[in-house]
View 1 (cartoon, rainbow, N blue to C red):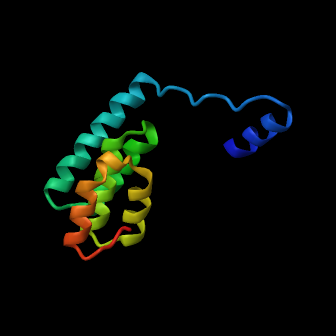
View 2 (view 1 turned 180 degrees about the vertical axis):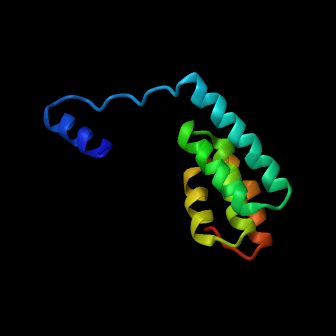
Length: 109
């Protein structure tokens, strides 16, 4: 629906609206989910880590959430999601994901 509204705004000659800043409670929730994701990843609970990091990312985009999503994807052997995250994350944050995937036999490039 958002894309439809953006397309309608373009046709009308207006620029797309800037993304809204997350509400303070969403930021707090995102940070809490991110911390839970980190803990789950450290415990080897990779499915939970990915899910929690993805939920955090949905509330507030962050490189930290993407990195955990990538690491968890590699750890659970999900090459498709690992590659998707790898393409989304800044090149300065890719090394840890590359190393984890390489250890699991996943090639990202």
